[in-house]
Image 1 (cartoon, rainbow, N blue to C red):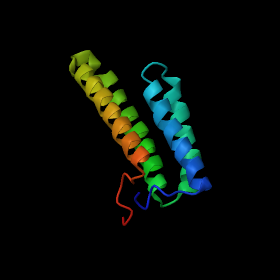
Image 2: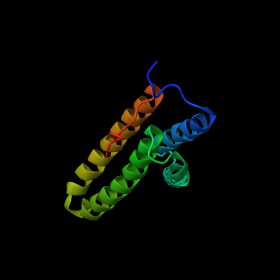
Image 3: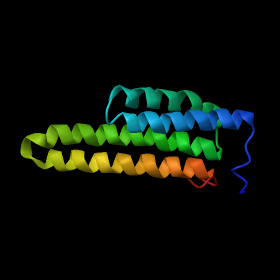
Image 4: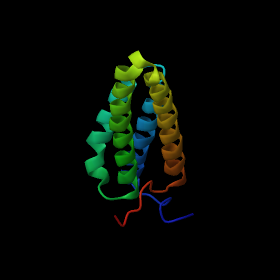
Length: 117
């Protein structure tokens, strides 16, 4: 067991919320509103997580939301010239990658980002 897998009760709660955020992000492919709920939860809990391995997950989740929102808007705007559909497809794949990678790292008890930064 590595140093990240031995967590206390407070961290266990934060890990459970991070898991819920990843699940809500995944569910957003069927129910879009869950994406907004997910980012709200991430914002609410990121302060408690601070600069810890769990904090990196909340940062990852929040950035996933904002970058995907930006590129989705760009895709919708440019859909009239056709390139938007390619952008929207790429955003979908990128969001799936971020959910899968983040969730896997969370289950393994690993930070997404280097904690030294």
